[in-house]
Length: 119
Image 1: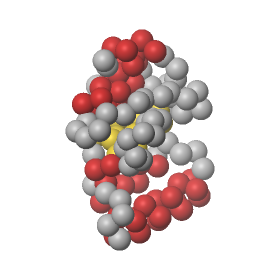
Image 2: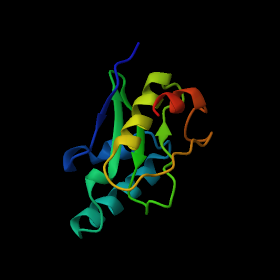
Image 3: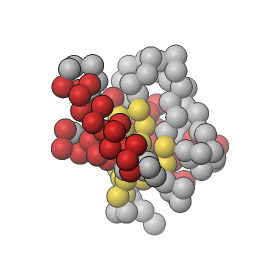
Image 4: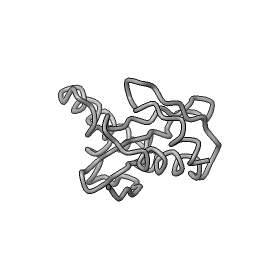
């Protein structure tokens, strides 16, 4: 059983945001772009939530889009239901405008029960 925790990345842990991207080259490009946007004040590490366990990064959610755009969290394919619930709850409890949470089968295990448990 994994113990899950939610983190906001820091400048030193921005790589966690793209840890689940299978294309390492693309992840590197996206990280470079994100760092530039942060340096220009167009983005902030606080726009992301990272789900971690003993295994490392289990999930990531970007809250940077306008609130009308749903949040599509990205999870490890074998993340436990508790992890999905923890990140869904953190998204729901995040200050600011409320957002819709959508699970897409290419980014997350589809388990409505885990999301409904989060409220």
